Length: 223
Image 1 (tube, rainbow, N blue to C red):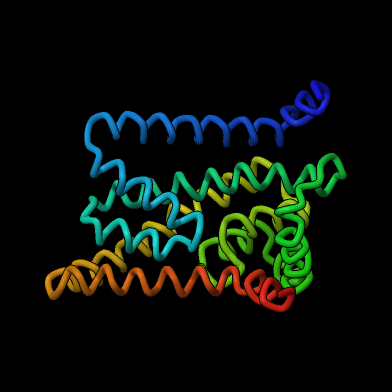
Image 2: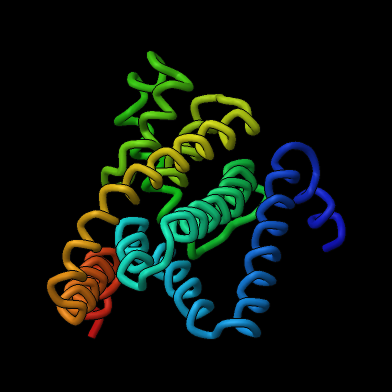
């Protein structure tokens, strides 16, 4: 067991995993301290984090603005959340790819990414790092920081380069999305606050059902 842990934290991939643990610890500490100072604010931060993890950045950004948090806080929390996901899942994929570990809950996701890489192979071969940046920057379905980082590894881009490119693209993308959504949410809040929260609830539920539809259908068929 000790040897496994030692290997997990070796080299560039190990440093990325350590970075993930550091960011996670920092975020948890920040949330705990916030609960001691302002429970309402801490609840909003927690809501953004879980919304981003479960259904993505657009609902998470919308939630933050609907909760009337500042632009800086909303952007910062979403960037931190997505970088935690990238720096945590990226090393796990690399270790899974090398046969060091097998994570059953993520295997289906990893297989989907490997298939998606085939679809974009010529694109990445042609544009390389720039292609990775654009892939992460444009928020289409099954693109984004996690998928982009893993495909970056699969096409041979260096580990640190992958993380830096993904980090920059994520910050720019979230910031632009934030500016766009802030205007929309602020306008809707002037009309009816309850309507905004109802709309967000419907969007989140719909996205959750869409994300987990395969598992829901599978359970239904099994029954």
